[in-house]
Image (cartoon, rainbow, N blue to C red; front, side, top):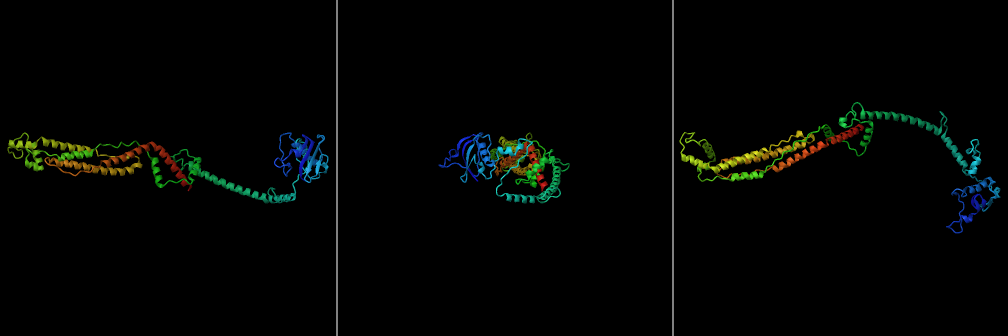
Length: 454
């Protein structure tokens, strides 16, 4: 039987003249009060009446009221509109159980007194008691017996699974021990380990902890093993000994265009033909022969070749033919050849690749080949000018025409700049050699681990 409300509590505990209908009005619905539901929760501060309410309800169970409550007076409205009062508790015959502090004191005395026992009491489980008991029996049968060496049902399955687990654990431990030994030998074993190859792999204190961590790294999808070319390059790098800076690449200042212009001026110069011997003017070889002979007859009046007397008029004619103007032009030709030879000697440039790291040798050899060709062609251009001046020696009275030689100096400067760039890279590599070698060793070590797992 459902309790609707405690309609009146005129006198009980802290309650005095309590009227449910006046105290529990629903403010949202006119003329309606809050009544008990299937589940009700009471909360409030201490001495707000929670215990007093539980004692009123328990009075329906025990049919008695503690004598400490003097002149109790209350009314309880039931769902069938019947009313139970403090004086008609015996008329309430419906099952009801209240587990409050009074229940604990009466039935669980051992909580307060170790010499007391638990009193029997009833618990209502509802109408499905038998189904619950049947389910419990069914579950007990499924569980079976847990008697040692006589287990049945689930207990037997558990025993068997524990046995299987023990075997699996033993196998796991054995395999794990094998794995740990394998990893330890690879990390720091006596022969062939990463630690013993620290010159290649870069860590003389390598251990299994580091190996385990790096195995995780190489197993990630983003890791890429080294190519054979990269490994070969790294192997060379880690063996590279630190080198000094290569010698500076020479600088030379050659204004070849100005040299061409100067040579052209000489070649276009002519000695005046007045007071000149016409036969010698027309024959350069004869002119040269006579000039050389005159040098041997400055103090002679007879010919050293034929012993004939040389007339003074002839000597004077020869002296006028080979006058100061001729000597000046010849001097210009001689100085021009000397200058060209001097500038040409600057083209003797040698770059020794042995001053550079091996990684630069291939490129340096290619550039050196280009440079050698350019220097040879530029030297030929110098020789062209020199040959023109040599030809001019025998043609002092004539203009000497010539084809302009090609100037390769711009290409030579660019090629030398390329070598200087490699030299700068060499110096930079020296400054970063230790860092680059360490990186190469790390990459070689990770690649070694990757293939160890394969």
